[in-house]
Image (cartoon, rainbow, N blue to C red; front, side, top):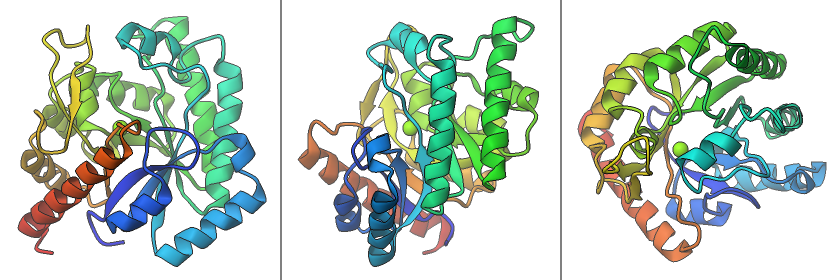
Length: 282
Ligand code: MG
């Protein structure tokens, strides 16, 4: 894969991405896939997807897990419902992530990813240690498939994420950096965060957002790529500075407006192509 291969976040029957045929129409080289529901992970579905990827020449670079019962309605609801942090569904969700790791292996993808949730901040607390343990368990499972686990950014500040990854202490835990989430969740300037995370960043989202008037209390606003507060040239220049050469996966989370979603992602592809030409020369 060439450096900064342009990609898009896709969905089969779950999640907020575009359908695979739209990814093809957009002319991207790579996709991240939101894990389909268990009923769409059968061997038949797997062979169909592998055939589609082979026909289109598109490479799947990550499979993202998500769970029943998650809600991003507002920041407190997100904290209460998202990822492996909520205690009630934790064991069941850990099992589901392992099945998603199995699915990723079946489609020849070496990265699984997820929103882990709001990790407790008191690193000496039992709650924190429990989240460390569950993440380590999942990392070890993924490692047996030769996979890395990428944590989507947003819910943590960059220094907290570095600490957490170090505490988990496996060699296959990294970061899927989403600059817009840093703004949406109010967890710090995305460029500073990227510099802090550095070589831990192994996949990225290209998404844009505007700061909330009350960062960390209410959501910021997701906007088309280039129209927000990230600063795309600054973002890509910083990715270059930290040595990131993986895919640039565009995410635009408005599946309720598919025509607009496709058109805005099309503009994002153009913007990224232009910036890649300027910075990498192709
Ligand atoms: Mg994202």
